Length: 599
Image 1: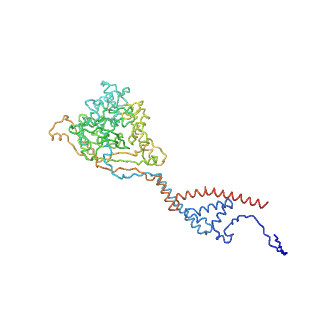
Image 2: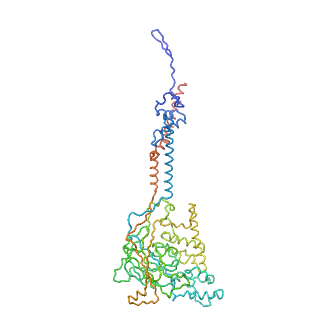
Image 3: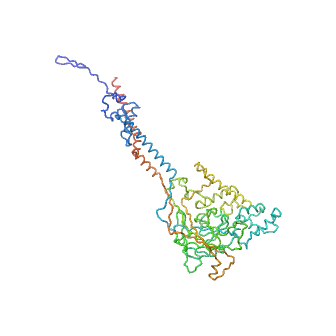
């Protein structure tokens, strides 16, 4: 460009070319630019993001994130002016921190998966009046009144005929009632006795087994002349109810009525319709109890019930305020043709909502003994937040989680009885006389005894095998799957006994007794303490606890918080979108400048 001088002289200036402004080219390496360490890293990062290639822009975004993130250590890996050996040092430190953090997080996750629930002691003591007194089921080994039905004599005559003729044609002309009683009694005899007679007996006689066993059993007031409960005397037959079990007909104290235990009483082959009335007591000088109101359930406890409650409870732990029964066996009723040589009573203590499983533990009360049973409740409660976990994780069922067809309440024993019932029905096409069943299912007859005995053994073996297999294969499903109830009540016992000579006791009191062959026994059941410690099933690792543990681990090893994760999402979503928008605007502006220069 030349500039003229109006004064006549002319000077020449160097030519200057005006070019459009272009962004500085990104250096390939720091060493290619002199004094790059003096250039602020923010300018280099922004230059890469705005003007660099796509790969360079990605690196710029990562550098921008690492420069601003709150996660410790990352910024040292990608800083432009950081020496290589420092980056290597921080890389090793970060890898080690990440490894330790992941290892601990995985360990806490496994613990949350495997053991999210813990059993511990409740913070406060539970008074015994908060729970019902145990349901006491007394099963005498004497199953029949010999004056009503003489099983030993009849079985001896039938067996003699079978041995002489190889079959049974009823040459003694036993009545149909006697035959029904004999065939009904076989259901509670030893299996060897059943196997001896079953194949020879007529198939067309189908007795009402439970009712027949009730008819030939010894009456309540003979087995239990008098009882005592909560300091009051009762005639035992006033507070006992007949209940059919696998042991035959037993006497039960403080059990729920059939309508309160079963969903439909028509599912039962027999139930004692006589309602126990605790206002009928022996001592007329004692004031009457208040009427029973309200209700009770294992989950909710007693609701609006006073001192006289259903089921019964007691306030004190002394033997005076427990249950006492004088039990007697008459020697003329002893027999050894049906049952074993063991004589006395089997006593089962259960929670009122559960049926007694006679294959479980029992207390043996021999004739001529006094047995004192001190009870310590085993009460397990569960917190409501356990619903967040599956039953397999917490190893229990809430009452609203496991539906039972026959029972209103879920308990482990009720589940086992229902499972055995269903298995017996599917295998034999009938149910045992004491089992709940649908109306269309018949009661097993004598010829079916071998089948239902085999079914019970087969079910037991099947559950054992599946339980062992489940230890190796967690996906293995166990038949029935009768886990404990999340709220359960059992009774641990301590037993002491001594000899009791009823005849000498009567002699000492200078009295006479109506039975000359009576062998007396005394049974006392009472709570050991006024209060007891309940077991509480609580959450060891909830989701909140798991997240808190993870946060603590990540904060300890990497300084990560919830905001760090939000920051990560922000940089690679909102910030990335904003950078892409600015790159497009810059590209358009440069394209306009280049177009104007060419024109």
